[in-house]
Amino acid sequence: MSAPWSVERYTRLAIILHWVMALGIAALVVIGLLMVHDDLAPDTMFRLYQLHKSIGVTVLLAAVVRLAWRLGHRPPPLPQTLPPGEKMAAHAGHIMLYAALFIIPITGWALVSSSVFDIPTVLYGLVPWPDLPVFSTLTDKAPVEAVLKTVHAYGAYALIALVALHIFAALRHQFLLRDNIMARMLPRWGKSRP
Image (tube, rainbow, N blue to C red; front, side, top):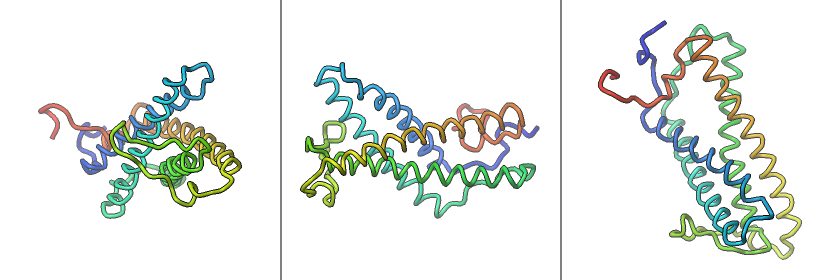
Protein backbone atom coordinates (compact mmCIF):
# COMPACT_ATOMS: atom_id res chain seq x y z
CA MET A 1 0.00 0.00 0.00
CA SER A 2 1.30 3.47 -0.85
CA ALA A 3 1.97 6.18 1.71
CA PRO A 4 -1.28 7.81 2.87
CA TRP A 5 -0.73 11.11 1.08
CA SER A 6 1.27 10.01 -1.98
CA VAL A 7 -1.76 9.77 -4.27
CA GLU A 8 -2.57 12.47 -6.79
CA ARG A 9 -5.14 14.72 -5.17
CA TYR A 10 -7.97 16.99 -6.22
CA THR A 11 -7.21 20.71 -6.10
CA ARG A 12 -7.70 22.56 -2.83
CA LEU A 13 -10.75 24.42 -4.20
CA ALA A 14 -12.34 21.16 -5.42
CA ILE A 15 -11.83 19.62 -1.97
CA ILE A 16 -13.30 22.64 -0.18
CA LEU A 17 -16.32 22.72 -2.51
CA HIS A 18 -16.84 18.96 -2.11
CA TRP A 19 -17.02 19.17 1.68
CA VAL A 20 -19.07 22.40 1.74
CA MET A 21 -21.56 20.73 -0.59
CA ALA A 22 -21.53 17.49 1.45
CA LEU A 23 -22.36 19.41 4.63
CA GLY A 24 -24.98 21.43 2.76
CA ILE A 25 -26.64 18.31 1.37
CA ALA A 26 -26.69 16.68 4.81
CA ALA A 27 -28.31 19.81 6.28
CA LEU A 28 -30.82 20.00 3.42
CA VAL A 29 -31.89 16.39 3.94
CA VAL A 30 -32.36 16.82 7.69
CA ILE A 31 -34.19 20.14 7.34
CA GLY A 32 -36.23 18.82 4.40
CA LEU A 33 -37.43 15.87 6.46
CA LEU A 34 -38.23 18.07 9.46
CA MET A 35 -40.09 20.84 7.65
CA VAL A 36 -42.79 18.62 6.16
CA HIS A 37 -44.29 17.75 9.55
CA ASP A 38 -47.74 19.27 9.99
CA ASP A 39 -47.37 19.47 13.77
CA LEU A 40 -44.69 22.18 13.62
CA ALA A 41 -45.50 25.66 14.84
CA PRO A 42 -45.96 28.01 11.85
CA ASP A 43 -42.98 30.19 12.80
CA THR A 44 -40.73 27.12 13.15
CA MET A 45 -41.89 25.80 9.79
CA PHE A 46 -41.28 29.21 8.19
CA ARG A 47 -37.72 29.37 9.59
CA LEU A 48 -36.98 25.83 8.41
CA TYR A 49 -38.24 26.60 4.90
CA GLN A 50 -36.16 29.79 4.74
CA LEU A 51 -33.05 27.96 5.95
CA HIS A 52 -33.69 25.11 3.50
CA LYS A 53 -33.96 27.60 0.63
CA SER A 54 -30.82 29.44 1.75
CA ILE A 55 -28.73 26.29 1.97
CA GLY A 56 -30.21 25.04 -1.33
CA VAL A 57 -29.11 28.21 -3.12
CA THR A 58 -25.68 27.91 -1.50
CA VAL A 59 -25.34 24.32 -2.76
CA LEU A 60 -26.49 25.39 -6.24
CA LEU A 61 -23.94 28.22 -6.38
CA ALA A 62 -21.21 25.89 -5.09
CA ALA A 63 -22.20 23.36 -7.79
CA VAL A 64 -21.86 26.04 -10.48
CA VAL A 65 -18.39 26.98 -9.22
CA ARG A 66 -17.40 23.33 -8.85
CA LEU A 67 -18.52 22.40 -12.36
CA ALA A 68 -16.77 25.44 -13.85
CA TRP A 69 -13.61 24.55 -11.92
CA ARG A 70 -13.78 20.93 -12.98
CA LEU A 71 -14.13 21.86 -16.64
CA GLY A 72 -10.76 23.59 -16.39
CA HIS A 73 -9.05 21.19 -13.98
CA ARG A 74 -9.04 17.49 -14.72
CA PRO A 75 -9.66 15.29 -11.69
CA PRO A 76 -6.88 12.92 -10.64
CA PRO A 77 -6.94 9.62 -12.51
CA LEU A 78 -8.63 6.61 -10.99
CA PRO A 79 -6.29 3.79 -9.89
CA GLN A 80 -4.97 1.74 -12.80
CA THR A 81 -5.96 -1.40 -10.91
CA LEU A 82 -9.64 -0.44 -11.11
CA PRO A 83 -11.52 -2.66 -13.60
CA PRO A 84 -13.04 -0.84 -16.63
CA GLY A 85 -16.59 -1.53 -15.45
CA GLU A 86 -15.90 0.11 -12.10
CA LYS A 87 -14.30 3.10 -13.83
CA MET A 88 -17.43 3.49 -15.95
CA ALA A 89 -19.61 3.18 -12.84
CA ALA A 90 -17.53 5.83 -11.05
CA HIS A 91 -17.85 8.24 -13.98
CA ALA A 92 -21.59 7.55 -14.32
CA GLY A 93 -22.06 8.08 -10.58
CA HIS A 94 -20.28 11.43 -10.71
CA ILE A 95 -22.34 12.55 -13.70
CA MET A 96 -25.55 11.61 -11.87
CA LEU A 97 -24.40 13.44 -8.73
CA TYR A 98 -23.63 16.57 -10.73
CA ALA A 99 -26.99 16.35 -12.49
CA ALA A 100 -28.81 16.00 -9.16
CA LEU A 101 -26.86 18.92 -7.68
CA PHE A 102 -28.35 21.12 -10.39
CA ILE A 103 -31.79 19.57 -10.94
CA ILE A 104 -32.85 19.47 -7.29
CA PRO A 105 -31.97 23.07 -6.35
CA ILE A 106 -33.37 24.41 -9.64
CA THR A 107 -36.65 22.53 -9.16
CA GLY A 108 -36.71 23.85 -5.58
CA TRP A 109 -36.19 27.39 -6.88
CA ALA A 110 -38.92 26.86 -9.49
CA LEU A 111 -41.17 25.39 -6.78
CA VAL A 112 -40.74 28.46 -4.57
CA SER A 113 -41.26 30.71 -7.60
CA SER A 114 -44.52 28.98 -8.51
CA SER A 115 -45.82 28.72 -4.95
CA VAL A 116 -49.36 29.93 -4.38
CA PHE A 117 -48.12 31.40 -1.07
CA ASP A 118 -45.73 33.78 -2.86
CA ILE A 119 -43.38 34.05 0.13
CA PRO A 120 -40.13 35.86 -0.75
CA THR A 121 -36.82 34.10 -0.28
CA VAL A 122 -34.25 35.96 1.79
CA LEU A 123 -30.97 34.06 1.97
CA TYR A 124 -29.93 33.61 5.59
CA GLY A 125 -32.28 36.47 6.47
CA LEU A 126 -29.95 38.94 4.71
CA VAL A 127 -30.02 38.77 0.91
CA PRO A 128 -33.24 38.82 -1.14
CA TRP A 129 -33.25 36.07 -3.78
CA PRO A 130 -35.43 36.53 -6.87
CA ASP A 131 -38.11 34.16 -8.10
CA LEU A 132 -37.68 32.61 -11.53
CA PRO A 133 -39.79 34.95 -13.71
CA VAL A 134 -41.28 32.25 -15.91
CA PHE A 135 -42.79 30.55 -12.85
CA SER A 136 -43.69 33.57 -10.74
CA THR A 137 -45.87 35.06 -13.49
CA LEU A 138 -48.05 31.98 -14.03
CA THR A 139 -51.77 32.61 -13.72
CA ASP A 140 -52.54 29.10 -12.44
CA LYS A 141 -49.63 28.15 -10.20
CA ALA A 142 -51.16 25.24 -8.26
CA PRO A 143 -50.75 22.45 -10.87
CA VAL A 144 -47.19 23.53 -11.70
CA GLU A 145 -46.34 23.74 -8.01
CA ALA A 146 -47.70 20.21 -7.47
CA VAL A 147 -45.56 18.75 -10.27
CA LEU A 148 -42.44 20.58 -9.11
CA LYS A 149 -43.01 19.47 -5.52
CA THR A 150 -43.10 15.84 -6.69
CA VAL A 151 -40.01 16.20 -8.90
CA HIS A 152 -38.12 17.97 -6.10
CA ALA A 153 -39.04 15.33 -3.50
CA TYR A 154 -38.21 12.31 -5.69
CA GLY A 155 -35.04 14.04 -6.83
CA ALA A 156 -34.03 14.46 -3.20
CA TYR A 157 -34.65 10.76 -2.53
CA ALA A 158 -32.57 9.88 -5.60
CA LEU A 159 -29.78 12.15 -4.34
CA ILE A 160 -29.86 10.44 -0.95
CA ALA A 161 -29.41 7.09 -2.72
CA LEU A 162 -26.59 8.46 -4.90
CA VAL A 163 -24.80 9.93 -1.88
CA ALA A 164 -25.16 6.63 -0.01
CA LEU A 165 -23.63 4.78 -2.98
CA HIS A 166 -20.86 7.39 -3.20
CA ILE A 167 -20.03 6.97 0.50
CA PHE A 168 -20.21 3.17 0.23
CA ALA A 169 -17.84 3.20 -2.76
CA ALA A 170 -15.38 5.50 -0.97
CA LEU A 171 -15.40 3.32 2.16
CA ARG A 172 -15.04 0.16 0.04
CA HIS A 173 -11.96 1.61 -1.62
CA GLN A 174 -10.48 2.76 1.66
CA PHE A 175 -11.08 -0.29 3.83
CA LEU A 176 -11.56 -3.28 1.50
CA LEU A 177 -9.49 -2.47 -1.58
CA ARG A 178 -7.03 -0.32 0.39
CA ASP A 179 -6.17 1.69 -2.72
CA ASN A 180 -6.14 4.97 -0.78
CA ILE A 181 -8.58 6.63 -3.16
CA MET A 182 -10.18 8.64 -0.32
CA ALA A 183 -6.93 10.56 0.19
CA ARG A 184 -7.64 12.33 -3.10
CA MET A 185 -10.54 14.24 -1.52
CA LEU A 186 -9.57 14.47 2.16
CA PRO A 187 -8.20 17.74 3.55
CA ARG A 188 -4.61 17.71 4.72
CA TRP A 189 -4.14 18.44 8.42
CA GLY A 190 -1.02 18.46 10.55
CA LYS A 191 2.66 18.94 9.81
CA SER A 192 3.39 15.35 8.79
CA ARG A 193 1.29 15.59 5.65
CA PRO A 194 2.69 17.59 2.70
